[in-house]
Length: 169
Image (cartoon, helix red, strand yellow):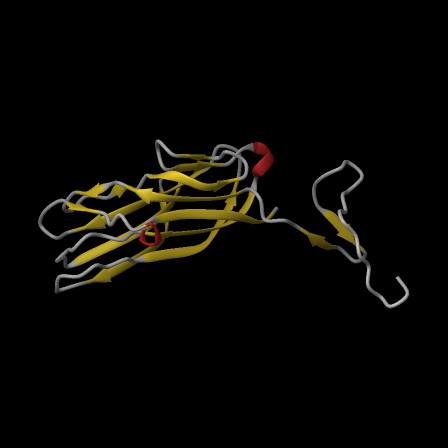
């Protein structure tokens, strides 16, 4: 390391995995668990908050996302702070209000609402940090619309997804 560059293939702590503390307390972390689910097939009834179930996992490092319920559940070994993101794209809709919400347990934590007076293809999205999640806490997404009838979500994967990753202990 004569020129100040250290080149290695892998660094682990004494236990063989986990975070490594360097010098004055700088911690390296690899942002897992992480997941991304796409391909929502949910329809939204008029005036009803509906849990969005993205049934195709593109990534799920710790098998914490349930494709049958749309719920991400934290275990004792995955406790921490998380960044979550979600989007919901509809088929054509004329609605006064459409929204997407991320819930921690039963509390709406993050929300994005769009107002619309004309037919279109709205795709609201929401993202942010969820306060400390501990063993048994769960996170899920709900959508809402008030067009006057039931609408289908778009089949486009880039409009319907839910994902997240750990950002700190």
